[in-house]
Image 1 (cartoon, rainbow, N blue to C red):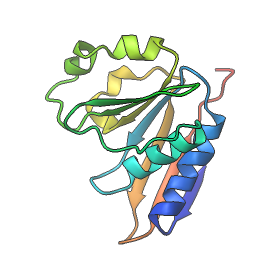
Image 2: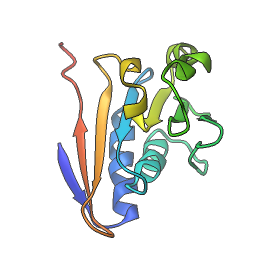
Image 3: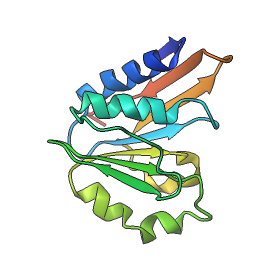
Length: 141
């Protein structure tokens, strides 16, 4: 599914729509250049999951946890030097805890994602417009 947004609130709203559909254990791999709107989209995921907290980028902490009936684990891989570092911080443990894992800069950890992961690619079209391409794998595969 491809959608176009014209401001940050619309990007958040698209994240919210996806968040409302997510189940425990879902992984959302986010791709996009700096400033594309990955964190804004993740704010929307949190809203859709019913989480009433301010979501911020975990660039320096690698992961932020947001409690809820389905918790959100928000990862930022920007500062990782190698893919093994993700597993060193307990990626497998987070995945098994039953929350939703949203991962910014997913291109840095390509082998971390199982085939059922949801892929979200956000492209900057101009200063305010974003193209958001969401791929939800077929649950029967």
